[in-house]
Each structure stands twice: as structure tokens, then as C-alpha cells.
Length: 75
Image (cartoon, rainbow, N blue to C red; front, side, top):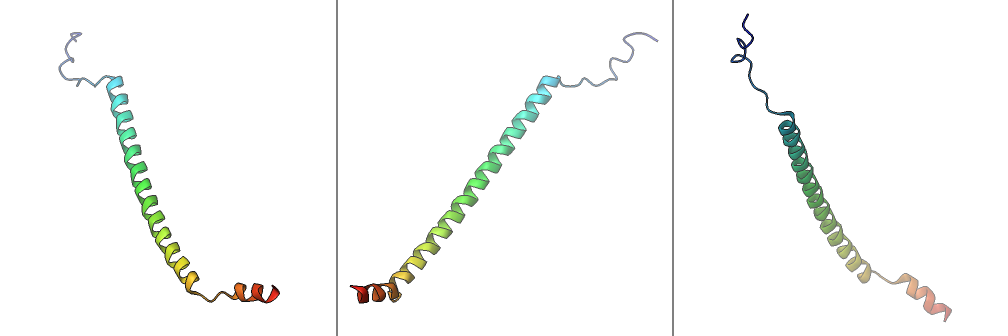
């Protein structure tokens, strides 16, 4: 067996630093995408809740003021 006989048959592996850098970059990118999607969902929820609260406030403004009737009697 010659010492350099199998050199051509063994595929060269990428350096470990390149693999780690690639994994780190992929993880950071995935994390950023997830945070942006979470933020977008939160903004949508917040907008929906704000609109619902505005409608409820308008309904409450149009309701009969029972507490006002009670307080007027005490004055």
C-alpha cells in the first residue's frame, strides 16, 4: 500500500469553521425571520384589539348613564 494511494478517493471536507459560520448565519437568519413574523402578528392583534375597544367605547358613550342618574339624586 502506497501512502498517497487513497488521497484521490477521500472527499475533502469543508473546514469546520466554514460549517460553523454557515450554521450560525442560518440560525441568525431564521431567528430574525421568526422575530419579524411574531412582531407582525402582534401588530395585527394590537390593531384588531384597538379597533374593538374603539367600537365598545362608542357603544358605552351611547348607553344610558345610570350612574349619573344615581349621583344627581344625591346632590
